[in-house]
Amino acid sequence: MSPSKKSSTAWYDSPLYYDIVYADYTKKESRFIEGIVQRHCPQIKGPLRVLEPACGSGRLLESMALRGHHVAGFDLNRHQVAYAQKRLKAKGLAVKVWRDGLEDFSLPKGQPYDVAHCFVSTFKYVRTERGAVASLRRMAKALRPGGLCLIGIHLTDYAKNPPDHERWAGRRQGIRVVSDTWSAPAVRTRRTEAMRTRMKITQDGKTWEEETHWKFRTYSPTEVRSLLAQVPELKLVVCHDFHYDLESTRPLKADYSDIILVLKKR
Ligand SMILES: C[S@@+](CC[C@H](N)C(=O)[O-])C[C@H]1O[C@@H](n2cnc3c(N)ncnc32)[C@H](O)[C@@H]1O
Image (cartoon, rainbow, N blue to C red; front, side):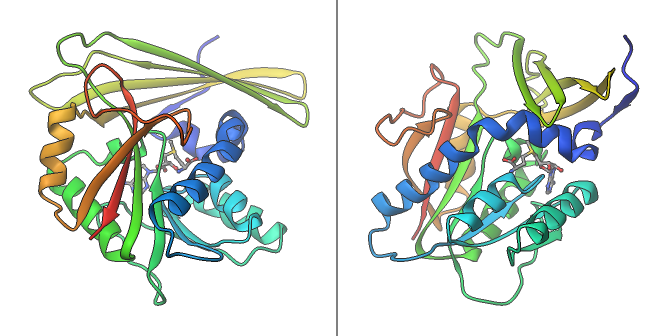
């Protein structure tokens, strides 16, 4: 079967299918956000003010809003923004969602945020160092002093640098989605890795595929430290991993690749 849709944004242009595939972790991630704030910012009481840069289909916006928090988010993809707005409205949740970019976003007027989060390697979409610095600075500016910025990224070990494959699958209301993502070995000199996702969708008795190709910026632990050195307003306090377990911390080293950076605004 050849993909019926092939582009650099195909899976984000189909927010429902993206949402089905990534629904599984939403509860864990939401609890993690609450837990990590409680642990590192005990002074913050009551509902949190949460910002989600590159919020996608709004799965975490919805989950955090349903848990009683004040939530806002933006994304570059208009299909994702429209989908997020519609789902939140359908649940009667007053959440501001707008179209904007990680590198140069603006925020609605209001109180600073307690926490900003950007999981599942989304930050690697920012392809330049300048863009990454600008993005982190903006996130820092959005936060209250002592607030947290949580960045989840897959690190690259240039010495080993194997190709990688991940499979995710989900089912909702008679729709089945299987998503395979491949990453090619990183090109160290360019700080890029070529990514490809193929979603196989079965709905109403039909099956078809949608394929997305894009490039991520790569980060070794040293490159993460070098980026953070350019944003002194954020201090790295600890790292966790993509299991979102508060009890399991990780050193920022090449031998463990899926890292959540917990950054605190000074
Ligand atoms: C892997 S999804 C993550 C979505 C959401 N945060 C989640 O956890 O489900 C990545 C999202 O980043 C968005 N994106 C990619 N590049 C972006 C950029 N430069 N600025 C804002 N959003 C971007 C895509 O449109 C997509 O919705």
